[in-house]
Picture: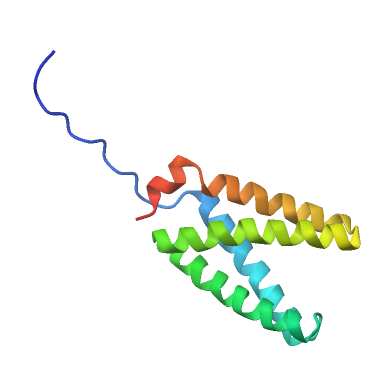
Length: 122
């Protein structure tokens, strides 16, 4: 055994394809939320909830695309909260499409918390 200090492993750089696809999906979800709020799909209270959440999600997506840790944190929390929101919507309406969307959100959350993904953001 030698006493030569070892260099730390180089940090991974660049975006993974899954991160880009999650960003695109979250942008689409946020845009549908904004258009739904503008067109009156939700009641007045729902509009005041959806617009700030969608705005925060768009900001987080652009942060994730620039590989910033705060963007990763916002999108990760957003995917978990969207999944929980869709689950709540499913329990009240029994609409099967909402459980599918909740599954997508949970898969995105589980992907974003992987070590390989966390190593890419700084």
